[in-house]
Amino acid sequence: MSSIRVSIVEDNDQLRQTLARVFQRADGYEFVSDYGSAEAALEGLPGDRPEVVLMDINLPGINGVECVRRLRPQLPDTQVIMLTVYEDTENIFNALAAGATGYLLKRTPRAELLEAIQDVRRGGSPMTAHIARKVVQSFQKSAPTDVPAADNLSPREQEVLDLLSQGFLYKEIADQLGISYETVHTYIRRIYEKLQVRTRTEAVAKFLRQRP
Image (spheres, rainbow, N blue to C red):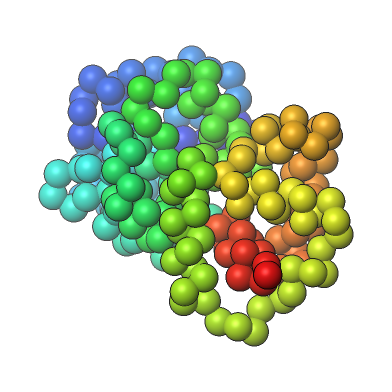
Protein backbone atom coordinates (compact mmCIF):
# COMPACT_ATOMS: atom_id res chain seq x y z
CA MET A 1 0.00 0.00 0.00
CA SER A 2 1.32 3.47 -0.86
CA SER A 3 2.34 5.97 1.81
CA ILE A 4 -0.39 8.21 3.23
CA ARG A 5 0.11 11.85 2.19
CA VAL A 6 -0.40 14.10 5.23
CA SER A 7 -0.58 17.88 5.66
CA ILE A 8 -0.85 19.90 8.88
CA VAL A 9 -2.68 23.15 9.62
CA GLU A 10 -1.75 24.40 13.10
CA ASP A 11 -0.90 27.90 14.33
CA ASN A 12 1.27 26.69 17.24
CA ASP A 13 4.74 26.55 15.69
CA GLN A 14 6.15 24.06 18.19
CA LEU A 15 3.26 21.61 17.86
CA ARG A 16 3.24 21.94 14.08
CA GLN A 17 6.95 21.13 13.91
CA THR A 18 6.55 18.22 16.32
CA LEU A 19 3.73 16.73 14.22
CA ALA A 20 5.76 17.23 11.05
CA ARG A 21 8.66 15.26 12.54
CA VAL A 22 6.29 12.43 13.48
CA PHE A 23 5.28 11.93 9.84
CA GLN A 24 8.76 12.51 8.46
CA ARG A 25 10.10 9.69 10.61
CA ALA A 26 7.19 7.22 10.47
CA ASP A 27 7.10 4.45 7.88
CA GLY A 28 4.07 4.49 5.59
CA TYR A 29 3.54 8.25 5.68
CA GLU A 30 4.57 11.08 3.39
CA PHE A 31 4.69 14.52 4.99
CA VAL A 32 3.42 16.90 2.29
CA SER A 33 3.08 20.38 3.79
CA ASP A 34 2.29 22.45 6.86
CA TYR A 35 0.56 25.79 7.34
CA GLY A 36 0.29 28.16 10.27
CA SER A 37 -3.06 29.66 9.28
CA ALA A 38 -6.29 28.77 7.52
CA GLU A 39 -5.67 31.52 4.98
CA ALA A 40 -2.37 29.95 3.91
CA ALA A 41 -3.88 26.46 3.94
CA LEU A 42 -6.78 27.50 1.71
CA GLU A 43 -4.29 28.78 -0.82
CA GLY A 44 -1.83 25.89 -0.69
CA LEU A 45 -3.72 22.67 0.10
CA PRO A 46 -5.66 22.39 -3.19
CA GLY A 47 -2.32 22.15 -4.98
CA ASP A 48 -0.79 19.80 -2.40
CA ARG A 49 -3.69 17.34 -2.62
CA PRO A 50 -2.97 15.43 0.61
CA GLU A 51 -4.99 12.36 1.54
CA VAL A 52 -5.33 13.45 5.17
CA VAL A 53 -5.15 16.88 6.79
CA LEU A 54 -4.68 17.42 10.52
CA MET A 55 -6.29 20.78 11.29
CA ASP A 56 -6.46 22.86 14.46
CA ILE A 57 -10.10 23.56 15.24
CA ASN A 58 -9.36 26.95 16.84
CA LEU A 59 -7.23 28.72 14.25
CA PRO A 60 -7.00 32.53 14.48
CA GLY A 61 -8.76 34.50 11.77
CA ILE A 62 -10.63 31.95 9.68
CA ASN A 63 -11.20 29.11 12.14
CA GLY A 64 -10.82 25.41 11.45
CA VAL A 65 -14.54 24.82 10.94
CA GLU A 66 -14.81 27.46 8.23
CA CYS A 67 -11.57 26.27 6.65
CA VAL A 68 -13.02 22.74 6.31
CA ARG A 69 -16.19 24.14 4.78
CA ARG A 70 -14.23 26.08 2.15
CA LEU A 71 -11.84 23.24 1.37
CA ARG A 72 -14.48 20.54 0.91
CA PRO A 73 -15.54 21.52 -2.68
CA GLN A 74 -11.89 21.73 -3.77
CA LEU A 75 -10.70 18.55 -2.06
CA PRO A 76 -13.72 16.22 -1.90
CA ASP A 77 -11.60 13.09 -1.37
CA THR A 78 -9.27 14.54 1.28
CA GLN A 79 -10.04 13.47 4.84
CA VAL A 80 -9.75 16.21 7.49
CA ILE A 81 -9.16 15.33 11.14
CA MET A 82 -9.69 18.17 13.57
CA LEU A 83 -7.18 18.72 16.37
CA THR A 84 -8.54 20.12 19.62
CA VAL A 85 -7.21 20.75 23.11
CA TYR A 86 -10.40 19.45 24.77
CA GLU A 87 -13.77 18.07 23.68
CA ASP A 88 -15.59 21.26 22.73
CA THR A 89 -18.78 19.51 21.64
CA GLU A 90 -20.31 22.35 19.65
CA ASN A 91 -17.18 23.20 17.65
CA ILE A 92 -16.46 19.53 16.95
CA PHE A 93 -20.03 18.97 15.82
CA ASN A 94 -19.87 22.01 13.52
CA ALA A 95 -16.61 20.78 12.01
CA LEU A 96 -18.04 17.31 11.32
CA ALA A 97 -21.17 18.83 9.82
CA ALA A 98 -18.92 20.97 7.58
CA GLY A 99 -17.18 17.87 6.23
CA ALA A 100 -14.46 16.84 8.69
CA THR A 101 -13.98 13.09 9.13
CA GLY A 102 -13.31 13.03 12.85
CA TYR A 103 -11.26 14.62 15.57
CA LEU A 104 -8.34 13.90 17.88
CA LEU A 105 -7.15 15.58 21.06
CA LYS A 106 -3.82 17.34 20.68
CA ARG A 107 -2.40 15.23 23.51
CA THR A 108 -3.12 12.00 21.59
CA PRO A 109 -0.01 9.76 21.81
CA ARG A 110 2.04 9.31 18.65
CA ALA A 111 1.11 5.66 18.14
CA GLU A 112 -2.63 6.40 18.47
CA LEU A 113 -2.32 9.34 16.09
CA LEU A 114 -0.71 7.19 13.40
CA GLU A 115 -3.25 4.41 13.95
CA ALA A 116 -6.14 6.88 13.66
CA ILE A 117 -4.86 8.10 10.31
CA GLN A 118 -4.60 4.52 9.07
CA ASP A 119 -8.19 3.98 10.23
CA VAL A 120 -9.36 7.09 8.40
CA ARG A 121 -7.77 5.89 5.19
CA ARG A 122 -9.83 2.70 5.49
CA GLY A 123 -13.05 4.61 6.04
CA GLY A 124 -13.08 5.09 9.81
CA SER A 125 -13.95 8.26 11.73
CA PRO A 126 -12.14 8.85 15.02
CA MET A 127 -14.63 10.38 17.45
CA THR A 128 -16.33 9.55 20.71
CA ALA A 129 -19.77 7.95 20.79
CA HIS A 130 -21.21 11.15 22.32
CA ILE A 131 -20.08 13.30 19.40
CA ALA A 132 -21.09 10.66 16.83
CA ARG A 133 -24.59 10.51 18.30
CA LYS A 134 -24.96 14.30 18.14
CA VAL A 135 -24.03 14.32 14.45
CA VAL A 136 -26.35 11.41 13.71
CA GLN A 137 -29.25 13.13 15.46
CA SER A 138 -28.73 16.15 13.23
CA PHE A 139 -28.91 13.94 10.14
CA GLN A 140 -32.06 12.30 11.47
CA LYS A 141 -33.84 15.64 11.73
CA SER A 142 -33.01 16.82 8.23
CA ALA A 143 -32.54 13.74 6.05
CA PRO A 144 -35.02 12.80 3.29
CA THR A 145 -37.30 9.81 3.67
CA ASP A 146 -36.59 8.15 0.32
CA VAL A 147 -33.42 6.31 1.36
CA PRO A 148 -32.37 2.70 0.77
CA ALA A 149 -33.69 0.49 3.56
CA ALA A 150 -31.23 -0.68 6.19
CA ASP A 151 -33.14 -3.98 6.38
CA ASN A 152 -31.42 -4.91 3.09
CA LEU A 153 -28.32 -5.52 5.19
CA SER A 154 -27.35 -8.96 6.38
CA PRO A 155 -27.53 -9.66 10.14
CA ARG A 156 -23.74 -9.35 10.42
CA GLU A 157 -23.73 -6.08 8.47
CA GLN A 158 -26.38 -4.74 10.82
CA GLU A 159 -24.23 -5.77 13.79
CA VAL A 160 -21.28 -3.90 12.33
CA LEU A 161 -23.38 -0.83 11.63
CA ASP A 162 -24.87 -0.90 15.12
CA LEU A 163 -21.37 -0.82 16.60
CA LEU A 164 -20.44 2.03 14.25
CA SER A 165 -23.45 3.97 15.55
CA GLN A 166 -22.05 3.59 19.08
CA GLY A 167 -18.77 5.22 18.04
CA PHE A 168 -16.58 2.10 17.86
CA LEU A 169 -13.48 2.18 15.63
CA TYR A 170 -12.86 -0.59 13.09
CA LYS A 171 -10.31 -2.33 15.33
CA GLU A 172 -12.74 -2.27 18.25
CA ILE A 173 -15.53 -3.70 16.07
CA ALA A 174 -13.22 -6.52 15.01
CA ASP A 175 -12.49 -7.30 18.66
CA GLN A 176 -16.16 -7.15 19.63
CA LEU A 177 -17.27 -9.52 16.86
CA GLY A 178 -14.23 -11.79 16.87
CA ILE A 179 -13.36 -11.08 13.22
CA SER A 180 -10.35 -9.58 11.47
CA TYR A 181 -9.82 -5.88 10.79
CA GLU A 182 -9.87 -6.61 7.04
CA THR A 183 -13.23 -8.40 7.35
CA VAL A 184 -14.71 -5.36 9.10
CA HIS A 185 -13.46 -3.20 6.23
CA THR A 186 -15.16 -5.55 3.74
CA TYR A 187 -18.46 -5.32 5.64
CA ILE A 188 -18.22 -1.53 5.72
CA ARG A 189 -17.68 -1.37 1.96
CA ARG A 190 -20.76 -3.54 1.38
CA ILE A 191 -22.82 -1.44 3.80
CA TYR A 192 -21.87 1.76 1.98
CA GLU A 193 -22.80 0.21 -1.36
CA LYS A 194 -26.18 -1.06 -0.13
CA LEU A 195 -27.12 2.18 1.60
CA GLN A 196 -25.70 4.32 -1.22
CA VAL A 197 -23.55 6.43 1.08
CA ARG A 198 -19.92 7.53 1.16
CA THR A 199 -19.32 8.24 4.84
CA ARG A 200 -19.73 6.60 8.23
CA THR A 201 -22.02 9.37 9.46
CA GLU A 202 -24.43 9.01 6.52
CA ALA A 203 -24.55 5.24 6.96
CA VAL A 204 -25.23 5.45 10.69
CA ALA A 205 -27.87 8.15 10.19
CA LYS A 206 -29.79 6.02 7.70
CA PHE A 207 -29.53 3.01 9.98
CA LEU A 208 -30.81 4.81 13.06
CA ARG A 209 -33.67 6.55 11.21
CA GLN A 210 -35.12 3.17 10.29
CA ARG A 211 -34.79 1.51 13.68
CA PRO A 212 -38.05 1.03 15.61
